Length: 173
Picture 1 (cartoon, rainbow, N blue to C red):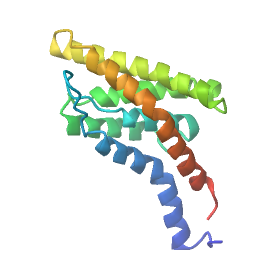
Picture 2 (cartoon, helix red, strand yellow; picture 1 turned 90 degrees about the horizontal axis):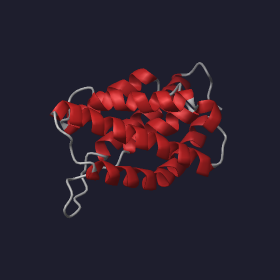
Picture 3 (spheres, helix red, strand yellow; picture 1 turned 180 degrees about the vertical axis):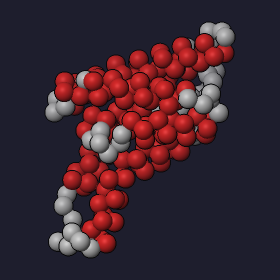
Picture 4 (tube, rainbow, N blue to C red; picture 1 turned 60 degrees about the horizontal axis):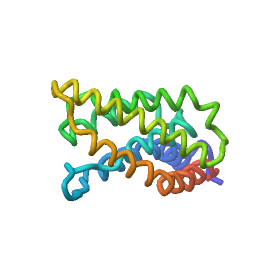
């Protein structure tokens, strides 16, 4: 057991508390690798949405709204989308999860996955609508649909990984 007054205890505490933020930032960086599918514009997987959904549902104090905002800004700068688009979209998804947290918390995986799917649909439609508005024309919906299916498909894998990380964060050193 580490003495609570030691610097190792505080380093461990900060590392545990920062883990969701650092993981989400890492996933934002990984998600910038576009998948090139024949006949379709390059698409990405919404790893940032997966992380924001999970941490907002299970440990929202470790990934507060201000962190989600800055993660979205980082994503916009990396992708080249209008600054604020991802920040607004991720905050929208974060708000949905926080408002429905009581309903989804401690439910079966299938219920949570359904909730994530609904959130991902709303997230995708919002982004598609905002991009269409900014572009001044209706943009193709195909890439948004593919991104939705890829993101929803990858949620169980990352959800499981996040459960393992979450359990290790809750363990006392």
